[in-house]
Structure formats: structure tokens, C-alpha cells
Length: 391
Image 1 (tube, rainbow, N blue to C red):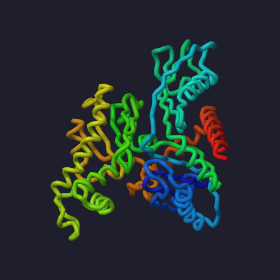
Image 2: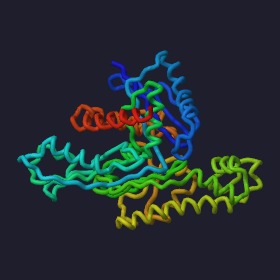
Image 3: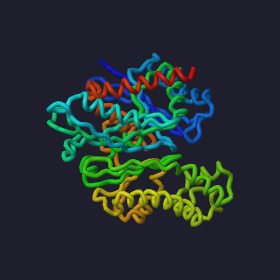
Image 4: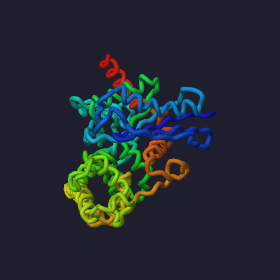
């Protein structure tokens, strides 16, 4: 039986999406597209009508392709400059001989409740690991004999106004959201293998309005971070430094970047040395901020799995060398290890769509479990409560 999934990558500059058909073991990208985001700036929906029209224009493409206006599941992967990632540790005594679902459920609910923040909404609660009897670290404690159980979890929150806007937009389009996941989570699932996560690896995601990154070691994420700067900040730097119109500065950033050669006659007046200094300074600033975070967790220069870059603005020539010099670690561009959908994997712009689809398939069986049901019920309950707040 054929199933259809729509995957959306909601960014501040573009909305990207793909419609993927699956029948048995065959995965086919029916159509993919991207449009410039309207009515949205730096993670804030300024004009609901324009933003809705942006997404509608995308949907019209696959409605024409299918001849129908339905999909089985909709998955969102998002980036947001004001995303907050917080780590929580909670523990409880085990009253029976073995850990049961109620014990796990209790700890999950506690973290969910204490992680609530004014004007922010939880979009993902991710168990990092479980600690049994203060000694044994596991990914699934169910059924283990124990006296005490501790949960270590990361909670991702975004501004509630942005969350409400997303829910409202897709509700008006009569599309049911199955899951919302930050880009850095889906990307690490796809781009890092177990050895890299075990040895110790830094994955850096550089896009238009934020830089996200995660450090893995011993198979677990040590910490996630989000820095609210990148693409737009570079454009402003070029505009000010070269005294150019902001649109012309954006064009130069895209077409020239850190190149040592002028790409066309219109740029023959550029001082490429000065341009490179301007762009390099911004990269160095961001990488220095990341390295300072590594120093805080005592991992600076101590990651045997090296540094991996991905994202549109990670691909400018020479960025890997800047990172290598800053982190004192071998640095590479992350490569997709699941090329079963080359229509997405071969295009850097769509890598987060591929990663989100990969995650949805990876956890397909998990959705049958009580843990997935718990997450789904809580996410749906929150969505419904906030929809009611709108009206």
C-alpha cells in the first residue's frame, strides 16, 4: 500500500519541502520545491497572510502532481535563531523490583512540566540517556532491576508566537503535523555515524540566520547550542564595509564569497582582499564562540572524531581551513551516508528534508510504542490548547 509523506523545512529565508511516496521498500521523491519566505523575518511571523501564501504556493505544486489534496503525514524540521536548548536531570526511587513504564512516564512528565517557560513552547523532549542505580548508563531502562532511575534529557523550545503561527498556518491548510524536530537533531541522525558519535565529534550547521551545533561523545550528545547569527550578519558586514546596497551585498556574498577571483565584470571593482577579511572575521567570531563553549565542557581540541560542517554557508571555499585553525582539529564537510534519495541528498539546499525523512523512517517502528504515544498525546494536547488560545 502506498503512503505519502510531506516534509517541510521551515527557515527564515526559504520554505523547502518534498513529497515522498513509499510503497514497500521503494522511496520516490514525487516533487520537491523551495520558495522565498514571505511575511517572516528572524523567526517571527510578521504577516500571517503572506506567510500562508508562501506555503500555499508550495502546496499547489504537489496538488497538481497528485490530483488530490491529501497526504498521510506531515513532518516539519525547523531552525530558529531564538531556539533554547536546556538539559534536565531528574530521578526517582523504583518501588517495584524492575523498571516499568510508569516509572519512565513519571520522569518524562516531570521534565516536561519543569521545562515550561513563559512565552516559549516545547517542540522536542529528547532523552539523552537513563542512569540506573547511579552507575549504569543505558538508552532503554525498561525491565531492568533497579532501586533508582535518573533521566537526562534535552528540551528544545521556540518562541510561543512562532509555534502558534505554524500550528495555525497548517491547520488552515488542513494538514496535520505528525512531528516537529529541530534541524540539528535530524542532521546529526543522518550525517554522523556511530563511530563519530562515540569518539567525539562536533557537528556545525551554518544557515541563514543562525548557527546550530552539537558535540557527541560516547554515543551521546554532550550539549546542543544555537547562535542567532550568520548569513544576514555577513550581508550587513559586506554592505557596511564596502558601502554597498544591502541587495548588492547579498549578491556578492553568494557569487563571490571567499573566492580569490572576480566572477564577472560587474565585480571588477571589488577589493577581494578586503571582502575576504570581512567574511573571514565573521566566521572567526562564530567559531570562537563555539570554541569557548567547548572550553566550558573541557572538549576544546579533544575530539577524536573531528569537526564536521554542513549548511549552505558552511560550503564557502576556505571555511574548513578557518575552522581547522580555530578548533585545532581536523575539519571536513559532512557527507550524507544514506544516498537512497539522491534527489534530495545531492542538493545541499534539501539536506534537512532528507534528514527529516530519514528520521521519520528510522523511528517508524518506535511510533508503535507507548513512549511515542506519550509524546504524541502531549504534543497534540499542547497544539490543541494553543489553537484554542488563538480564537
